[in-house]
Amino acid sequence: MNKVRVLLIDDDEDDFIITREIFSRISQADRYELTWIDTFEKGINAVLKRQYDIYLVDYRLGKHTGVDLVNEAVLSGIREPIIILTGKGDYKIDEEAMNVGAADYLVKDKIEPDTLDRSLRYALKQSETLSALKESEHKFKIIFDKAKEPILISDYTGRIRDINKAGLNFFGYHIKEILETNDRSLFYTQEDRENFIQELETKGAVSDFECQMVSSKGQVYYCSLSSFLQIDPQNMVEVYHTIIHDLTYRKHQETKFIHESKFSISEHIAKGFVEEIRNPLSTINLVLHELTSDDALAYNETLQNNLDIIKTNVDNINQLTKNFITSTETKPVQKQKTGINALIEEAIVEINDLILGHRIILEKHLLPSETYLLIDAKQIKIALVNLLNNAIESMESYPKILNISTINDSGMYSILIEDNGKGIDPELEHQIFEPFFTTKKEAEGLGLTNAERSILAHNGRLIFKPQQHGSLFVVQLPIH
Image 1 (cartoon, rainbow, N blue to C red):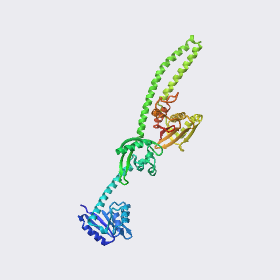
Image 2: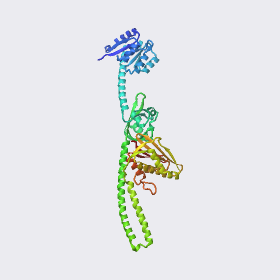
Image 3: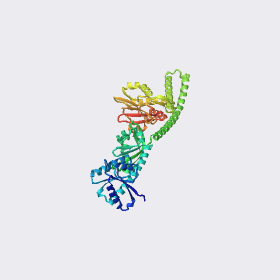
C-alpha cells in the first residue's frame, strides 16, 4: 500500500516534534510519511508543485497565515486537501478557513492520534469524492458546451440557470440576457409550458414533448423536448435539464408534402370537372351554330337576341373553366435576384386604391437595408397582393389598421401582414389553405391556396397566427 505523504508547514520546530510524536501513536502509523517545512514561501511552493497528498498548515506563518496559503492554493486549482492548525479554538478562524476551502480545522492542544487520523482520512476521502465530482462536471461541461442541440437548465419558477452555446444561437440571446429571462418567454404558448412542467413534475422525466418555442426576434420553431428532473446539491432545489430538438424543417417538409398532395388532387379534380363541363358546352355551341345558320330563323329578332345571350354565357363559362384550370396548375418558378423591400412596395401600390377607398391606416415597419432574395418576383408579388386584399376585406369597423413589417432571422426573411379585422373562426382555421374553401360571397376560394403554393415552391412557409383582434399572416422566404 502506498504511503500517504503528509507535509507539515509550521515555523515552530517544537510543534513539528509534537506532531511527529502524535503520528507515531496513530494505529497503523506506517501508512503515513510526515515531512516538515518551516516557512510560508517553501510551503506554498511545495503545494503548487503538488508534491504531497495532504497538508497540515499552521495558522500563524510569520507575516502570513495558513488561510492565505489555502486561498492561494485554491485559486491555483490545487485539489489536495489542506487542514488548518492553530494554538487555540477560535470560531472565526474556523469559519474563515472553511470558507476559503480548507478541508478541516484542528486545535493543536486538543489533537489526539485518533482525532488526527480520522481528520486525515476524512479529508482524503472528501478530496477523492470532490475530484471525481469535478471530473464528472468537467466532462458534462464539455458535452454541454459542445452539443449541437440546445440544452437548457431551468427550475420550476422559470428561472434559467444555464444554457449552452447552441441554445444561445437557437434563441438569439446573449448569455447575460437569457439568464435574466424567464423560460416562460421561450414557449410560444403558456399552455405548452404548463403541460410540460406538469408532465415533468409528475413523471420526473419527459421524452419527445412536442411544442412551439419562440426566439428573441419572434421566430417560432416546432420543437421536441426531452427533459429530466434533478436536485441541485449545492442549492437544494429541483432543476430541469432539457434538450431541445428542432423539428421545424421536418414539420415544414411534412406540411409541404401534404399541401403539394392537395394541390395535385385539386388540379386533377379541376381538370376532370372542366372536361365534364366542356362536353355539354360543345354540344350547346353546335346547336347554337345550327340555329344561327338557319335562314328560316334569321329574321326572328327575339330568338336571335336569346341566342346571343346564350352564346355570351357559354363563352363566359368557357373562360371561367380556363381560369379555373389555370388557377389550379402548378406554375414553374423562374427565380431571379430581387429586392424584397421594392417588391413589397410594388404590391402596396397595386392595392393603393383599395387602401384609399376603405380609408385604411397603413403602418409599415420594413427593415431599412434592402435584402435581395432569389425568387420569382411575379409569383411572390401576386401572393402578397392576395394576402393584402384578404386583410383589407376582413376589416369592417373603423379604425381599419393594416400593418406590414419584416424580420430577418435564422436564415429566413419574414414578411408579416397583420390586420385588426374580424379574424377567422377558430373552427375554420385548419381549412383556410384548403383549395376552394372560402367564407366570402362570389369568391373562388383559391387566393390563400395559390399564395401558399407559390411560397412553398420557393421552399418558404406561409403561417397563419390568430390575434386577439384580427389576423396575422407570416410569409417566410429563405435567404440565399
